[in-house]
Image (cartoon, rainbow, N blue to C red; front, side, top):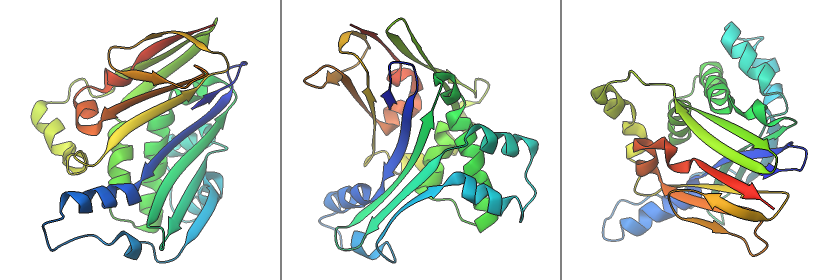
Length: 234
């Protein structure tokens, strides 16, 4: 996430499937069955797709709910970057969202989940690991604020009444990836960082303008507030 002085910026959310497959194969060196990362993409691709383009096509083919229509409206400008390279074993998917005001990000995960569901209906796709990640993130609302050189990230669970059995069942799709995935957040600030309030381990760049936090997916699933922090800038 990149934050400018006026509070505008760019938010990116991505998944590196190629690295995941390579990590899985490393864990299974002694087994016969391996996933060939080079065989996954059908062709080499490096495309930037406006989500609004998909919206225009989808709304003419399927009936969208008012909630889905609103999600597309709020996410205008959202782009999806797809990069696949057979020879290099690269499979990357990334959402890129330029925003003018930080409060535009407060419903990002919920809107992305709705857009993802529309895509599945339109293309009649089966659930994938990427879908699992987006659906899991959609259970939480993340509020961002940037005032007087103080940046805050706060997570709010939207499933407070969910029982333990139901929660365990719903996260099965993500559990199978937890050994291979870590969730990393990277924040680029317009001023050097003076102080970081975070319960875990956070790292900074040499110029103190970039913050790095990394958390295992399984730990984050149990406690989404592990990524909450506050930064005071100079």
